[in-house]
Image 1 (tube, one colour):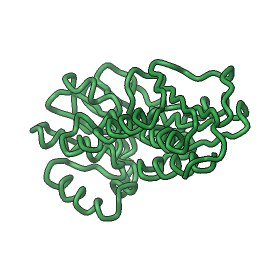
Image 2 (tube, rainbow, N blue to C red):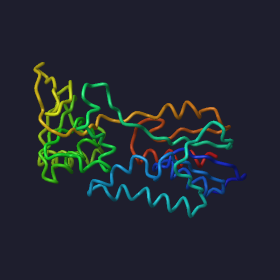
Image 3 (cartoon, one colour):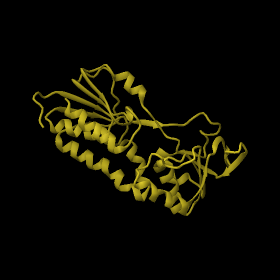
Image 4 (cartoon, rainbow, N blue to C red):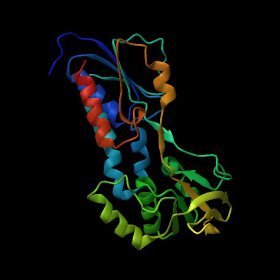
Length: 262
């Protein structure tokens, strides 16, 4: 598994894919530096720590950090990578950012982006609208319902959590039925202090009530980071959400193989 020649490898982003890529590259004998712009590793996994039934997923990032450090990876927190770095190999695992479309009121004080719920959960009132019915929105809605809050979920599509694991999804939907009032086929028009004004399938304008709103409308790749760094090393690979918004499993798999190719 060890490489023939020791090379300098720079990994951008300490989410699960970046951590595993750095760990794999170090095990192969390379000099590996892992840079993370925030003050903690974990990437999107940090958002899982507020959900008790997802806490083990959050802990995965701590495990990968320990493995990387024991393998010899130098981890630099609060560090953004610039094109001035001169590695032989660059693995871009910069992740994704929340999708917050220009819907009126969506930047209001009663709105919390689902990625930041773990930092702002004390702001959530007893009447909540979760805006977005993908996996992240559904899991957050279930958690809030388990806490005893009155939870409505708004989703423009006719189905919930199409991005969930095929085995996991039926169990997820059963929990949704227990804890959440669901509004599928609803297009969000405006967020107010009273909830979200929506257009339903019949074209009627209706208010889905809630004094707090969780924005869970998906993620988009950090293409700005990719474009800035793409041609700054002889070997460049883009992995995880930075390449295509996908699953944690895929991010780790791509990171492993990107490191194996160096």
